Length: 259
Image: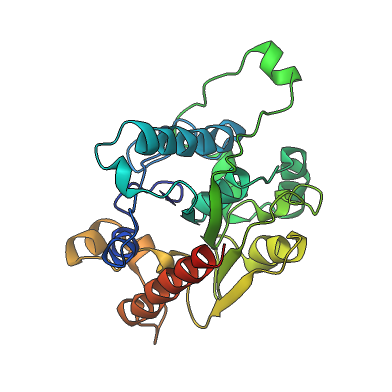
């Protein structure tokens, strides 16, 4: 399973999906309703992170019960990869419970943080929850069928405490970009790394920025979306992705074969 970041889509990590498929995995990338490149209805809201793991569960249900190639899937060897908001989606899906009460204090202390700025100027109104839902804690969807996970530059890391991640006991591969200005490591990936009950397989990518975990951009995409396509000086995204995808494939192979 592959979960994209805010504003992305099923194609965002196409090269990683292809690498997994070429290695013999069934790679399934979703486009999250309400948080993708043409639909921002839920972006930067709690509802987004409630709904995203549910999407993953529904897709796994479909793949195991209705997809015509379901006999090619080993239900005991399901893994997941996610980037940014997709990384947070992974953490929730595999047992994590973020504490959204930590969001407001964080943004008061860090008003210039990338996500805090977008909470204030979010495109499109979020559907208003009912008064009853306002009084109830969120129901996080966890899926024990997911046995192994890789996350890159996870978002809302500051909302995950040790208690919130205590149930995340599967093998985790964690990727951090040295120059991440969107989900800075000290507030996100580093927090997750310290809070996980078992140390993850940790990778810090020198010179990389937040969006360097996305597939290399075509010339047309680079013109339309320079924010996600502009690489730091001296950083070769294409070369990095050869190593990145190989490491993800190796991680899933090793951890699934050892279970």
